[in-house]
Every structure is written in C-alpha cells, then in structure tokens.
Length: 193
Image 1 (cartoon, rainbow, N blue to C red):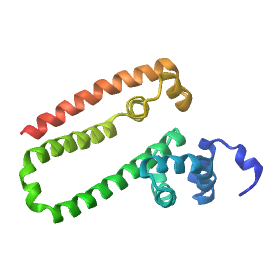
Image 2: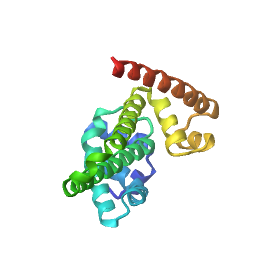
Image 3: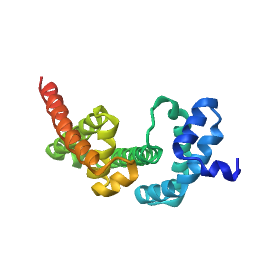
Image 4: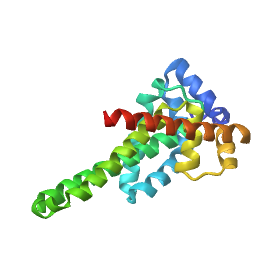
C-alpha cells in the first residue's frame, strides 16, 4: 500500500475504506501517519523508549480491535485519547505493582497511614468518577473538554485540531463543563446513599 495516491487520502477517507472492506492496511496507513506522534507521547508518559515502542504496538492492536466499536469523527483526536488512556493505564498498573511491593515489605509501618490512604482513595474515586463523567458527555463536548482542560490546548488549537469553529469550541467547553458538574453531583449523591 505504498501507493502515493493512498497517502493523499484524508483520515476520514481511510476510515471509510476500512469500514467498507475491513482491510487492516487502511488502518496501517493511518497509523503510520501518527506513529511518531504516538511514540513521542508514550515516551513522555512512560519515560522509557522500549516501553514506549511496546506501547505503540499494543495501541495499534487495540485500535484494530476497537475501531469498529466507535463512531470516529476525528481520528487524530481519537487515537491521541486512546494512546493517553493506554499510557495512564500502564502507569496505574506499574504504580499498583509498586504499591503492592511496598506494602509487602512495610506492612507494619504503613498500617498507621490509614487516614492518608483514605485521602488517596477519595482522590482515586473522584478521578474515576471524573473519567466516567467525561465518557458520558457527547463526543464533541468530550473532545473539547479533554483538549482544553487535560491537554491545556487553546481555543484556537482545539478549533484547528477538530475543525470546529471557535464559537463551537467555546460552546462545547462551556456546556461540557456544566454537564460534567451535573453528572459529578449526581454521582456524589448516588455514592452517599
């Protein structure tokens, strides 16, 4: 598939071709476009080139298995989110493994830190609730809120990346933020019952 005409196709066209004939080479072309970006992103999170390369391979496999489960409007934003989530899961798993090792070694010493542990559990619950709440937003709001608050992008950068107008970006962020607050309040009430 090193046909130069294929390189001219947009991300959306490549996705449509994949959905039409299920030929994974279309996704391969798409993935090649972003492989360096993904590797850089994985390096930023995982701080190790070998782990980052492994992560990119795993993300490619995940993309292949998950792509038909999602209605993807902006492949770049979607693959960025998939990569970020994968890296965060790797860090969480590494952190949990490290915590287990520490716990095994210092079980007696850590027993006194129950109060601190409660604070961490509360923060962990809040982060999990936030993650769930983000997933309940409509796709436009979710992308804009994620890019603005989590990735610290400007309105203009978000507009450039997503193709939304500045007015749409501002509206999606404002409505997304309001909806997030409502969802989180609802979750808090449910947790207190």
